[in-house]
Image 1 (cartoon, rainbow over the protein chains, first blue to last red):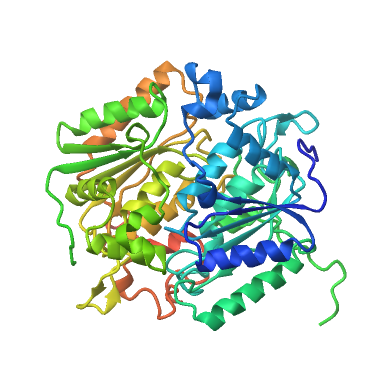
Image 2: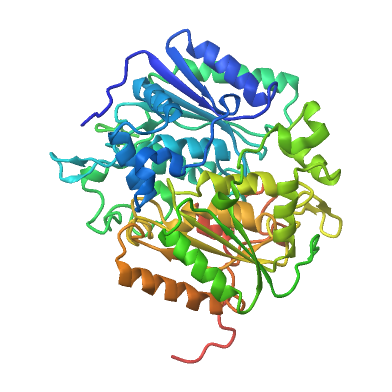
Length: 274
Length: 274
């Protein structure tokens, strides 16, 4: 396991995206960061409050903006030459220090609000978060071994839909699949393991007692984030994928759902007789 | 089929998100809009060039910003009271007029760039794009019958990954699943049918001849957008979903992939003997 940025033990980074003070998300954020601060040094990114600009563009490139070429490649060069804007470098420092990352947002149009998506677009540059070759294994450093390896993440998401609508075979798609681009495509890509999602359903219609219950439930969940078993996505370098980057035909034959990218739970090595 | 905003025949709206002039996406955008203009009146939203602000926030609410409550609900009220910002009303007018919508972007972190995600966050408000009850069928107007029913969309996406990586069982997840939140969660939700994705793979490493080929391929694709059969996602009101909003147990029993939300292709009613 090659780590580019070793995390500082006992340090957390809570990335939060909701525009309204007094909202359910605001209350969860206030209570959650308070609870987490009992066990961790907590840095926060309150993106709306900070006025974070989520649009990756020429100003991310410093002097390199004059060069032609792919913007993601140039942003990696800007990182290497320390030309990224100061706000981006500050965000990189927060996540680089953290061993625990919390990502909290309301589900808008079945994904992240733009301000949060753009945080990843701008902050997780090449060089910083992914892209070096791993000389030991001969594969690119991504999917389980990026620049942020050695961290775990908790995704806290509120949704107006109920659990059936967002559950297996639900009309909106199951939430694990809808957020696969975040949990696998972003977090796992750069080496961060994610825990099971922390979901608040029916978020627009909770009464006061239900909100209190959800706050208590989040506080309780935060007690176990250090000891839970993360989702075991497959590592690129473990040989589960063929040269084409498709999953080996003998693993989950015939299946095409996104769940095939999770390693099956280990069988009990010595099962009790039934 | 209840239509809130009848489209104007022969009108298209091309929504485009890429920050760099001279990029592959820029060339596809220039050629594509030129080609489409032969058959359609084409309005464009060049989001980076316009400096579009993708962050849904208090300023979207007009006088309603002083009210507590859910921001999506309040944005719907702001729409009804004609208090949305002028730039949002202009975008709504463009998509409301179009019978064909093109959405073009580079795949960043396995999803849309923030500036495009935020276009949907801000423009597709309640009242305008979804949310009225359908008195005839007794279900909410969403998933096949929103405020923008009667339109079709072509999603044009460039990806650095190759076709295997983004194909069925590919390590990054198949692109149809990764973009399900866009094609189904956004477009179909508000009533817009989508055509098969138009994908440019290996987008960061194409040589000049390959770029020319991709430009020609897009021009050719645009000849058929009016006659292709769209993806047949299931309509909420057609009875395929139970009260829980989970797909009926007799439809694709046992499957949990997102493909279950597509109606199976009709069988040939009178198949020829083999």
